[in-house]
Image (cartoon, rainbow, N blue to C red; front, side, top):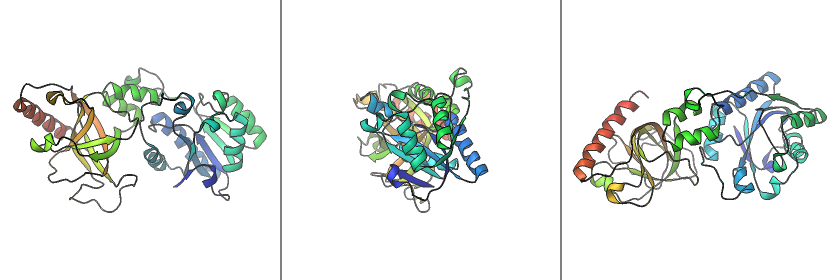
Length: 331
């Protein structure tokens, strides 16, 4: 799969495309349906499928300081879209100047000149152009003039987790903020993931026999509610680079390791900073400092508590690890 940042990186000889456009934060099941349809139609038409997204999130430019909690950083989104079969991902830098472009200019520059769209696949609530003036009706009208068609994929509703509401990134953010990892996974189609670099913390866990990876999360990350969770810790590699090479027992690179995960301020020690710490169960001697890791949240175990003694804390931590080991053994 090809990855482009900016229109200037699109090859001049790319040929015609089936295109879908959106923020695609989280690449949840609603996104998967639209992207999957774009890939399906591209194969039928004998052309390539392109997903177009934006960086930073448009709301951060239009309303500075309003950046929504991030469900997946751009490299992760591209990875997920590649798994769905897209041939290329185009990331458009969303600048103040770009935000002021008219719908007609956006269509001409992106869909016609750069990607030579033959078909555009979108959901019914798709908006584009300055002040979100463009909708799917206008897109179809412009497409008739520019020799591309528009297909609208109906919104799909979520089950119990969403009370029958459509799949959406907003819904996932709410479920994550509430610590409802089962509900979030229902909408995402997989466990919610937080990524970051392992940094040095107070090292209390190591002293107590439960050495944790203290993860400095990607800015704006959607971090679950305070509490203890079962999940997995995966070493992705050096910061900014995907995992490479075979998995190694010395650092767990590329391996999803069962983990007990703590999110919060560690009230027993009166910490002020909120942290994400993952204990890779039964993995001894891991040295993860400076490495880029992923933490996947499977299930909420309990809330954050303040203990009267280290002994009481250790007893509860041992129980947390036991439950996390049992829950992650199915993977």
